[in-house]
Length: 218
Image 1 (cartoon, rainbow, N blue to C red):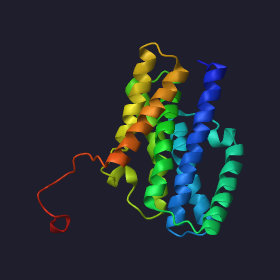
Image 2: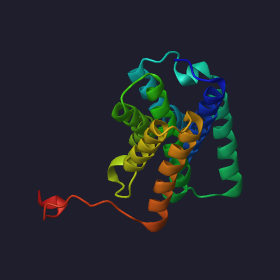
Image 3: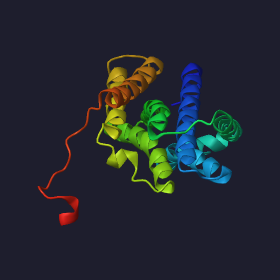
């Protein structure tokens, strides 16, 4: 079923904002690891496009969203150059905490667009929500792996993928309750981002696995 023009435009804008947010998180992480200019660009690109590309592969969507909107590649290059110049001029020291804020924004936006695109293909709610989670988390996983870190989605005991999962269900249930897809998209994104930001601010953590032994004891 073709999307209404307004919904298509809204999805494009949300996806663009999510792409830039994750690109910024990748850029900050790469700068924190003191990578060179090529490394910064690669990590920013993986963070920005990794989740959406995997989503498009799984949903058999062609062309990939970054191929269809190639101007985003130019935007990524421009952001990388501008940010590196700013960081150098201001002598700003990137921290892991600084990377978490754009990451939280991208998490919410990508979880909503991934879920919405899957719903548009007539997939069941649980499948659509998982597509949203994949879209929201896979770019960050690639970013962290390339930077030699255990992915935030796996090591951060504060809710991460759970936030994307909750936001996706808010979107699904909102549409089932009769809310138009556009507002439902924004509400789902706001819930996912809001939950992640709340976890960062309060320090709330999920229960940790405990076997009663220290890790080095086997």
